[in-house]
Length: 143
Image 1: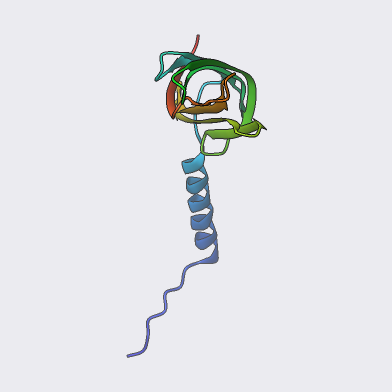
Image 2: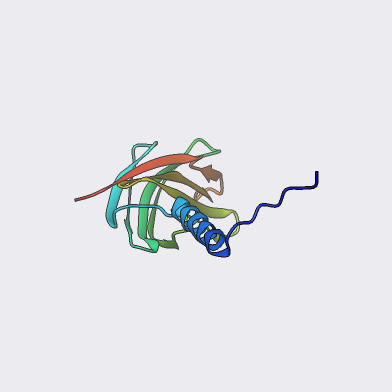
């Protein structure tokens, strides 16, 4: 006996491929409410931003940095904008000067909730290195 050939009508094959592509696309789509989000960081400081259909806009937050000389520095970030990926994430890092950086990343985890991480590294007025460490945040949609 020879091999068995299975014949699938061309229209059925095309329809099956289209259904699979639509299902795969839907799996990457993220459903969320646009508008203002606000919340707290693991340091007890505030974060806020606005989610549009395509971006996180006006990202602003406060952090506390601990310095190697024992000092502390308060830091405020205002005005970051970043496009959203199809998976509902955003991320950016700024390097305004040598030894200074701010990192932000976030992920839409439900229809009205975003979680993420923040980190700021810099120097204080005495030249000591300062770092917030990895700070987490949770922000929820405001009515």
